[in-house]
Structures are given as structure tokens and as C-alpha cells.
Image 1 (cartoon, rainbow, N blue to C red):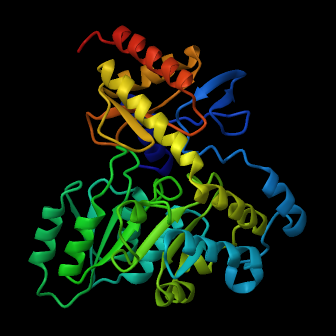
Image 2: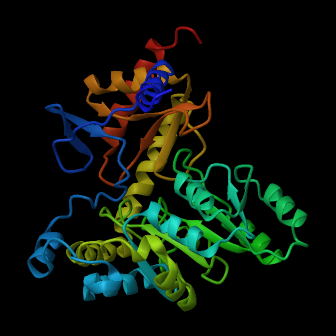
Image 3: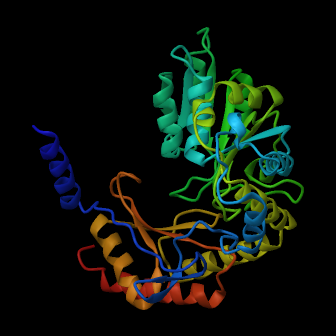
Length: 391
């Protein structure tokens, strides 16, 4: 088989399996409404949970000071005062001693796992963890096992099996699972890790900036835990903060270790300093807590109405509200049929989710109104009835 044959065969198979993915070309800033192919659509696909992606004033002002690019990697001359100030603010916002900026969450997760783990170490991951955590484990060449989703008993069983080994153990989990919207029981995981002397790492991409306890932001604070119980914390700037980038928070030693040895940090150009400066303003908005209240109200309203309409929504108290469809082709069809009705909702299919669990991944934001949500629910009820044949 030639390279061309391999590529063409894979493409053809993907199309036959109804798993073909295509990009859309958005002609507007992100928001509750976006412009797509000349049509204004209610956007229920974005991860701009607090509606901060359109905040351009701070970025424009910062660009006049810092220009467009950072010009180098952090360890050459790309680390500016703006980066340093943002790292300090991020660490304070989640209650950790230090934080380290990365280009994105994928690179941050790869950096931590690739740098900390070696062939002798053991890594335990939730079955539904994000691909970046799985890939980080694979790249590290460690011994990796995946426990059943949100099953701390299964994790404890794995750790108990291997407690006599001299190797080190690390447990990694999403805090909010991106395709289901449910949350990990971090308190249980922290207790199990403490009992078995394992290090706990939490990917809080969908919780940072959105969840919290009033003093600190994120899932760690939401579940009343501390940096001692969760030694490694990863948050992103592209969701709750509406920008781009990510960070790892941890102890002084951990951050210095990553600066010295993390290849995804060392060998890449730093985020633009102007963006780092603007993110400080967005973080201040996040810490006020006002937009989170609006988002929480929208989530409650959506779930109440969806249950009344007997929609098959999955258990979730977060901004991610999946509507389970099951059939891949039907999920795609409904997603496409929503567009003429002025609504954008993404269909999620295997391999992103398990076979037979295709869904419409509805994401709510603080920018949506109850009228927006009513329009979505009415459209869903209508289309589900139209597509009911064959069930």
C-alpha cells in the first residue's frame, strides 16, 4: 500500500462511517450570536462560558505597549513583565504558590506528564479524560492504566495492586469532563492519592474561571480543596477567560522543575505579551463573580425546561449540557437541521465519544438569554419528533 492509498482509504472509511468532520468559517467575533454563511445563528457550541471573548479594549490598549508578538521563547527574551504579572495573578486566583504559562492546555498537559514521568512510573487516568492527558501519558512511556469513569473504587483497586512496587504513581483527571459535563469527585481522589502516596493532577479546562467558592476560582475551590491535596493544577485561558493560552499551578519546586525540563515550555515562542496583559483584565472580571451568577441561572433554567419537555439530557450541573441522541447519522442530521432555524449546536460522535452515545453538545454561556434558550428547546422538540422514525 502506498502513502496515497493509505490516506485515501482512511478518508473514505471516515466518510462511510458518518464521522467526517468539516470546519465552519465564522464571519464574526464569538458571542451568543455568530455569523455563518451570511446567517446570524444563536451559538450553543462555544466554550466562551462567561462571554469574555469579545472583550477587545484591553487587548487593543496592550498591543500599543507590547506589539503583536513576543519575539522569542520564555527562556530567551520572550518572557515579559506582562507574562510575569499574569502568572502571579493566576496563581493567586486559584490559591497556589506559583503558576507557569503555556501556549495551550494540550501543551501544558503534555509538558507535565512527559516531564514528570519515566518508564518505571505508573499513571492512572479516568476513562473519559481529555485526549491531551492520554497523549501525555503515551509520550512519557510510563505504565498507564485507565480506571472506569468517575469510579474511585476502581482507581483504589489499581493502586492497591501495585503498592509494593518501588515506582512513583500519578493520578490525572479532568475536573469537568468536556463531552459529558459531569464533574470528578476530587475529594475522593485526593483521599485515595494521599493513602497511596500518589500525586494528583487535575485538568480544570472547563472549570477555571467558571466555578469557584467566592475567594478562589476553579473546581479545586468549588470542592473546598487546597493545593496540598491537589499538587498539580492545569487551567486554560480560552474558555472561562475568553482568550487563549493555559497555565500549570503548583509548588515553587514543581514550577522551577518545569521551567528547567519541560520541552513544550522551553522550545516554543511565548504567548504575545499583549494577550498576557489583556488576560489580567479578564481575570479581574472573572474574580468579581457576577457573570458566573448569570451563567448559573441559565444552566438552572435550561435543565428545568428540558426536564419538563422530557429531553434526554445527561446529568450535568455545568455549562456543558449534552443531549443524548445515540445514532451518529441522526445526531448530525439534527445539528444540520437546526441551522435553518437560526441555531448552531455541534454533533459529537465517535471516536470523541463512545460508540452509540452520539450527542448534541449544548454549551450555555452568560451571554445567552432565557428567550435564546426557549428558542433552542422549541427547535429541539420539533426536530426530535421529525427524526423519530426508526427508533
